[in-house]
Image 1 (tube, each protein chain N blue to C red):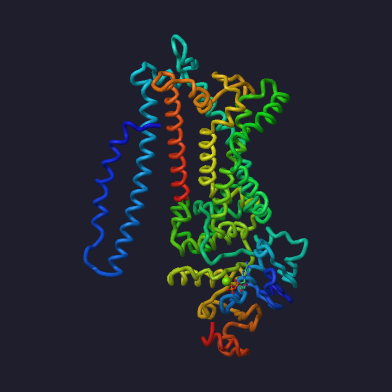
Image 2: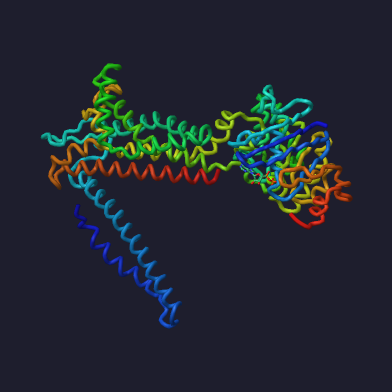
Length: 324
Length: 249
Ligand SMILES: Nc1ncnc2c1ncn2[C@@H]1O[C@H](COP(=O)(O)OP(=O)(O)O)[C@@H](O)[C@H]1O
Ligand SMILES: [Mg+2]
């Protein structure tokens, strides 16, 4: 990746910021104090530099994706409306069309369905590990779930393709590939995110709240339903949203089981596709600067904006859990 | 005697926390447990509503009877026991709900659903906890917006709302300022008319001020139990005398 438009603006920023911290070392005080101050200054300068670099990198990526992704709309005659609501994706046709609604539909439906499957599983697993059998949970269930997080996407995709897709094909009408297959694979992939965050939230609940409930004669289930879940709800939702974000951005595993037909399917068991699948599948066949290539960047921009949205939602939830 | 404790032994795994405790607790009186920290006061208090059940590794021998019934017997339902034996903790622990919902929490658990009935219970409980005047116009506000002292009185109201016979208070004023402490001490004196109160305090003066009976503990054993006045005026055991005259603890 080359970053032509951001490099020049980034470089001058370094010297401009440096003098502010360079004023720190005092010239006179001899011996230890001076040495300490120099070390202090060096450490600070290093941290500032790292942060600056990080900001520059993030900023460059955003600017780069935005500049490429906006080109089709700004100078290549594609309308935003067509991209968001159009049903036809034919970038190489004589009259090229760029309707991305089927991809948006695929991405949203697989991610949301995955969350609907994984959220109850993950939250129940977390309750089991914190409220019911902490010992068994810690020694068996938690490592098992953490293991899930370490399995590469391609393995998930492969298992999905050889187990879930045939199962769905035999059980339901349809080809087996499709949104349901994608959602099932994704739900297992996001299970660790949801479970881990839920477990942390449940563990950090003040012990006094639970005791207060039990002391009034509540059963364990009443305490879970009336105190524990309502109190930790914002944190639990944070886990679910992060899970959705992860599912939304996953490409490989979904692409292997969803079928990759670029239209909105009539059922959960028919071939469909997602934003990420279409980008990975088409990227190699386009030339830089072409309309097709830029249109893929537009899809990437949509993914980026969705990520911003998810981060924003998580922030709002975090603020709510602090105010509770 | 509403509570009879006989030959009670409690172990936290290998640690012997209560050693052969024998104790009677009279009805409609305030009984105070005093003793240095770590001597087992809270542990004994929590055996009275079986809050120790939730701690893994706890083993209990002996008998605790409340109104003639062994609360560790197989026919005792622990939820029902805790409804009869309320508890107020050291740190105020209101739920992150409205003031109203905090007080109504217990009655709702036990099946009260009618609004008018709940309203009545909430008002009565808050009045008994001398909190009604301060909160009657803000019942919908979060309980966490109250001051520490108000929160603790709310927890007392919450406990009273399920109509217990016995109220256990574990150092319930130790996290509060002096004015709130005085309020809760006065409240305790009033509540004794209708409830049996067992309180843990690390503050001997508090025990002397508000309790009718005082029990002195040391290292998991009951050293001395008698009327408060007698215990502080003429302790029988040398260790009690050392403790109340401030020679240790
Ligand atoms: N959950 C527990 N697990 C193990 N030991 C405990 C536990 N709770 C209390 N203990 C021990 O039991 C003893 C009595 O504790 P506690 O009843 O809390 O004392 P007190 O309330 O008199 O300060 C202490 O030595 C304490 O360390
Ligand atoms: Mg204690």
